[in-house]
Length: 72
Image (tube, rainbow, N blue to C red; front, side):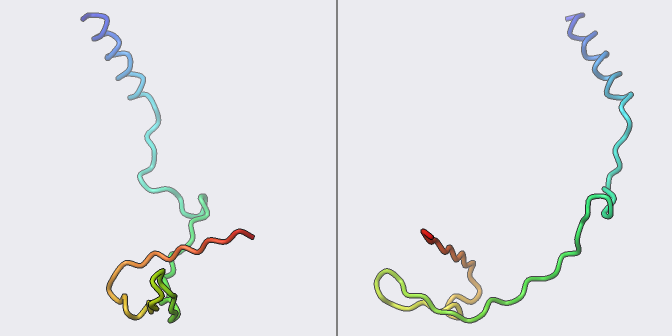
């Protein structure tokens, strides 16, 4: 028990002696870029596996994940 308490006190003292980090990083130093809002996706349509066509406009208000895969 005493060993654990001594270790805890040593670790607490060691952590207290570390320099405090800034809450906010310097944007220029880390090359932070301003966020530009996303642009709307162009209208497109893709065939489903059952042959029906799905248009992006039919999915308005829903989350859409488009995954293109190729074997080039």
